[in-house]
Length: 464
Image (cartoon, rainbow, N blue to C red; front, side):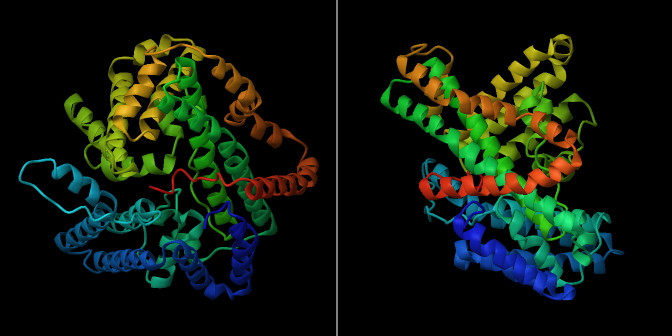
């Protein structure tokens, strides 16, 4: 079940809201917990028990940290146990088969490949529960006395599957007391609809171009122009897919009374790779900065230590995304660019005109998406070689694809900037109140028509 399925849109979501608001205020956390477990269990069945186990262990460890706060040694031990458990849980389900397959290449080493099923969203909910015990130990968040409320925090279906990653301290007060005004609910519904349209009408519409260029590579007909056109298509697809999901999650959260953190800030308007990562998947980069980079020492302690910390964080970022060598290479690729910008290119970038900086950033990120999207390193290398002149430059098929997707690409370019939201915010308030319901109904109708007529409806981040 996904947010863009007709079953979710027209049955599960309305029923969930009806059940939630029908429940007395003191029972709403329990109602949301049960609704979330049903949502997750619908897709995962037995594996919902893994999430329940993770929730229970971190709830207990948070209580133990609070109980033994005066004994720092014991408190740190319980934090360490929580972190190790979460990493082992994530490591087994996400990385065991990858490690087994690679270790078996070593003579004399043999581990069975178990074909372990990867529970949806495990990377997200393990990070959330892990941060809870750390924040309780640091004194940044109050301990949660109610297992129901803590379970609600971990399992909230609006952001359970693909984030944004919500830290407990960000919603601790709302778990205890929250209210939703008519304006809040309407704003949340509008945000959800915008996200749905971004995912269904924009991300899905450009995904076909990326698939076409991958097919051209398989057929040996990919050109340099076609390669870059494909990278541009995937860049747009993953942005509107993932940011669309985040918008839906933020909107749903608001409809249930929660304020989730923003996850994107128009990353394709960035003028450096460093700025890009301040704008892309902000909840993940913020998590790694707060719980890994800063504890390692951050940029304190000299250049060598800073370089080490950047490499560790981005290696972990790559590994977090998936158990495959291309993700490791992708993480190291960005570590390299961030180090270059910090120590080599900073002065040059400051003197470079903004359009050139913008073009440079888009080129670097497009190549990065190639590394991210094509898991087979041989095929990935061949694709990128073609982009940089390792084959024909142009073909008649490229002209056809460009003409076919020209309008879509223009719309996607405009939609990836803040131009439309700024115009909407500047419009007369009475116009916005009148237009919003009409636009929402039109978007829902178009999305429904697309979903009924098309079977192509991937969610790119569900595998993480």
